[in-house]
Image 1: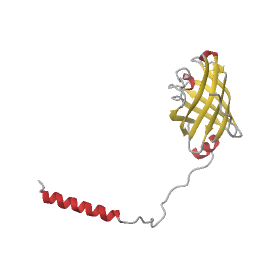
Image 2: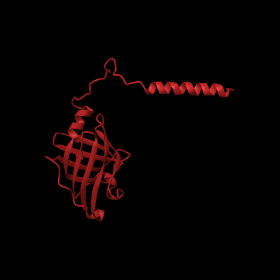
Image 3: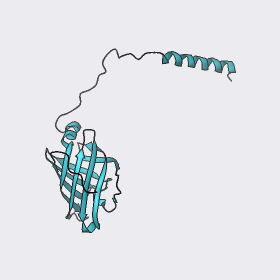
Image 4: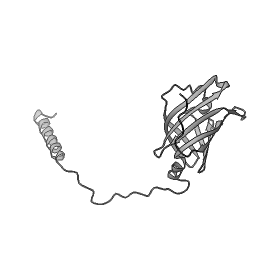
Length: 182
């Protein structure tokens, strides 16, 4: 068992070391830290992010039923992707099967898997209530497969068993799109 004197000595020593370290000035490293170059070649995460970056306009949206049959859905929308992996979607689905107009307004980060040509939504949030139960085919929990070129983006939404639930076609826009109706 330690005496009070031993505990006091340890406490004073620790305090003295902390005080001495507090007064030390930070110094630069003696040598540079070695890092590897970021892969920016075709098919790399960086080159794919650059392809995604910008504004996109929705040209078509189709939902896919359990039999694999596609049905067009009347919709308009804009997608914005920035250099930091943030995605923002603003749009309107005007389809009688969805009981009126549904405003899509959400944003979050995406994680790109270039090997599988997929991306995953992370931390999706919306400032307007969006009933994703009505929009199950394109809900944020879906994994998305992509095909991208310099001016077109095709996104296929997949369910838990990797079957398509919807397909969205996008065209690159030249600048910021007009704001959708609220």
